[in-house]
Image: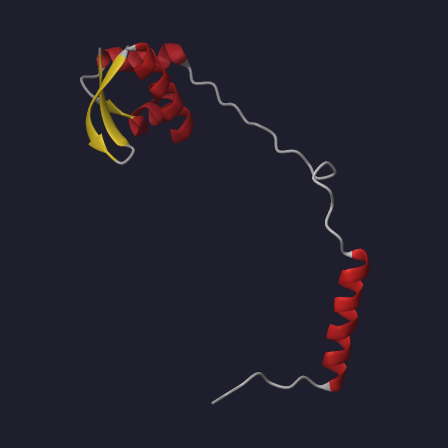
Length: 103
């Protein structure tokens, strides 16, 4: 049925010169020359978070995030650290939406 439209001579010439300039000077930068990614660390207000945990019957990562005004990923890292220490227990949930209780 339909195929690629044939380019006009002017368009074909522009495309050809663009390809030639890419091959000559358009080499990628070395990895050392590229900007390094900065690591952003967000510190959870532990006193506020622990106070909330002690007063709650059950809680989720989203609730801790909302209470401490940090991203969910930072709150999740904080809760996983508390889970390893044994300060909290996981009692339910699935697929990243877990429910915790204070130990």
